[in-house]
Image (tube, rainbow, N blue to C red):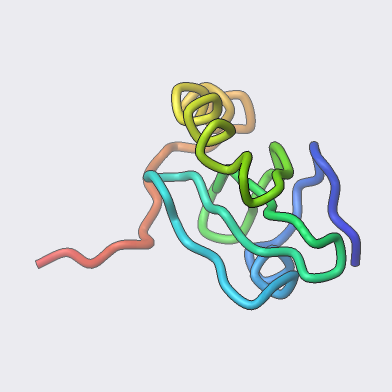
Length: 91
């Protein structure tokens, strides 16, 4: 499955695109995309849904992150996310 900006896909589909994914900031995930030879940037809307917000070459990732981090909460709010993501450990 080829993903593009604006797609809302399952977390499983997002993670299947590449060899790895990393949560860079609370709610923003960057994953490799082997087929398109780039990185997908996604905002986690809830435990199961990711909205693909951008794609970047390796040399563009840092700049794209700086652009998207301030927008995470607003994107989540627009899509009905409570912002309560349970993808971390509590002690």
